[in-house]
Image (cartoon, rainbow, N blue to C red):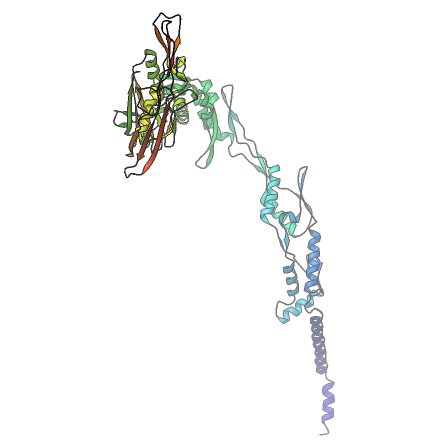
Length: 594
């Protein structure tokens, strides 16, 4: 028992003991340092960490975010200058949509010493006290905005290359050498600007320019040169319908052009006859080539109407003719070309005529009156002017307008016509109301809609009672409308004595009934006698014919097959009483009698 104290003293004093004690002290210091470091930089960026050169050590997330945001804001006013020769352009970061990832950078700074295992993180923190770590501040650029800016710059700097070509000088084919162009190397420039913009470094950048060679070189045009020389080597003859026209080499030269076309992936120059340049020459040829189209028409036999088919015509086809001339020009012989034509349709095609629905006779009416030879002329030509009229559904026939002016130049003669109350005088066109009255009655019995109709002021007994129709220039008129579902065709003919009008269309089976009243409001004609000493005794002369006054009414009813009323018209006719005036010789007492 007495030996134990001496043994303890010997163990404490051994070297091993002091080594253990030293190691323990070091470990304790390290642990303490780690604990202190953890406390000091808890939720803070560790010392020695910077982002894009900005020291963020010891800053909280909010402080680091504010510091980096302030740095980014300052860099927004740092422009990049692009330069090409004497020209410069300024690009601001905001102009191309530059954005910096401040949040990502702060997150990376906070996590730099905390993202591995404990031992690795301790080593990292220890190193930071001596060497530090600079983290990048990443950013992006809006590629669409950047491309738009570069596109605007390229528009000012780019020069397109000029392909080698051929020209015509004094009738000779000349080779034109190509010229190099230049273009902004936009891909390289975009990379350079993106790197500078996200690094927030304002500087001057030389715009990279690349050379653009022509797609077509002089040696590529040898074949085209030979073709062009063949084209102008001899005249070309154009033929049609027995006629010929000659294109001289000088003319061919003036109509030539050159175009580039792709042949097996290679752009190749080709000479050709330009149809635009050739147009003026073909315009002189075209009239002799035309075969006129014939419109579809109608015929009738008095009962039915039918379509006579139209016939297509021919006109010069300028594009095809130019192509044929071009093909002939490339030949060394057989340089005669037939003019190319294309079909031309008539204004009224067969199909369009058939769709008009003109096939059935709707009505026909005839009036006859001999009259004077001049009156017969007037009636005959008026029937011609009033005839062969096609009316679409809804169209209105205007007799005065359709007949036209009654002038000598149009064939009219002087014949008796009503010029005022109870007054007949020779006028140009006297007697034409035989035509309007005949047509009115054809309209009447066709069941068409009557728009306007007036009776003559003088009663004419050779016209149907209550169904006469007068027409005066710019005054009383006869008008009617086509109220059917199809076209109608007005056909008239006259030999000056007998006049007939027939109306054709599609039969809707309209039924026409009418009544004609007896004369009413009848007033006997008065007779006025006037003494004329110049007449022989007992001699009398009627100098003014008179007429009794009267009126009558015609009522027309037009119905459908099922009895539905389409029209119910009342046509009133009134004739005033005009006294007869008689001159008598002196042996007879002059009297005035009612």
